[in-house]
Image (cartoon, rainbow, N blue to C red; front, side):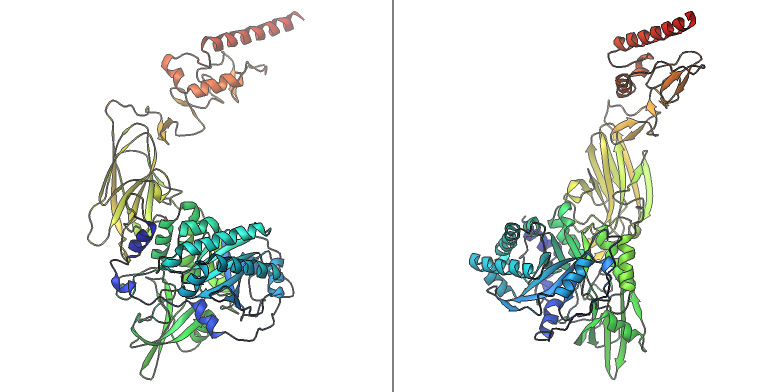
Length: 637
């Protein structure tokens, strides 16, 4: 099955025919560009000083800066890595329609003083125009020449391509456009210039060849604010984190589902090139009732975060839907209800948590200054991107160890600390993008691994066996039971939440795991434990010498297995030393290495073993003789 078909099925287009028939949403980028078309360019309000960056964000923070936003003083520059200047408008031939005040030296110089990169955004809205441009080699070439010239004229650091929406007939042409743009930037002496692509929450037209695009581009900015829009038939959140049973009748798409689909098309490395864009705005709907998600009879446009905060200072009651992690408020005017869904620090925190749990490259927003003059969204970014917390046990990089069999564990997938695995290669069309618990199973002999969870009516935990922390490394999958023949090694076992599109079937579970060794195979000795497929001492500081010992201090195994000190000597730092303080004969580095590498070979014979066997014994005898000779000579003096 091709990637396009996989994307379509993963989004459920075949099963949800009503979704496929929906009008392609018009993005906020296009709506607001149209609203501000012809608007007089406003002089920039420049900060008197820009503090030097002291602690760079751990991931990309990519903010769109529309030309109609003039104030640079309220941007928290230390929490930003990229500013996308929006925008230069193009037509279907690639000619410039409007520059909107570019070059903008005040913005660029202020950003550079703060250590923030500036990308120059180029916009073209409408599939037919994009097709006309991208499918013509000559138009691609002239447009790319224009892009490089404008970037250089304004001293920008890179380019943002905001072409909405790319249709299936332009799939190859759009890839060629991005590839040729990359080559042109390199040829013009800008190998460090980055290319970002603004992309939709759903690739409705199957026009985006994601692996090919991200081979040439640096970033793919997902405009994660197209779930409820100006044409929606119901009121709802612009940036929908998840779908709960209450919301399923009116929406099936969400941030969870979008990331799951895009991540399935990409390698683990390319997933780092995704940036999740969040809305610093909401939308006001006129609805038939005050119930959440009510049918909309009209909409009154976008409501910035700042405007929402102003509303909440009035008589409206702040509400929060904890299921979908989204704030909203409502009021009644005459016989009409009004509902506003927007995002605040709490809801954005949940979105950032998911983006980073999914190992995306960063986050961004539409648009900078839509929160002016409030600071809490900047505070959240700094806390999220500058802080670090230890990984909880059960994360994919901190799995729960299974140390003995049979093993049983009881947990709840709603509380799973890992939220990375979405569609496993064992069965890539099965949606598993709920939270998961991750276990580590180490076996040191061949055999059969068995795992099971009960059948539940109201939840659906599924089992997956992996060779590494990658959804493409799936070895075996089971709905309620998993059985796999394994060789010595280390494996990850996930208990993941199946998504009955669009709702996560999460909840408590009981996991049972057992291992049946292959007949005739041998496991680890009683004093050893299995780690990564090898029998080792549980304390990594100890060495297996028939028992687990510290060769730095053990007089029977001083420096190596079986190397005993003489009577009256002590083992100090792996050397035998006498009472008089004379250094005893120290094993050569080669001998120590050989004895350690020999591992438990010494326990088989009870004799001192080293490289070369008898040769090591002869070296030891010579060393002892030399020491006696030195003592004898000293006595003679």
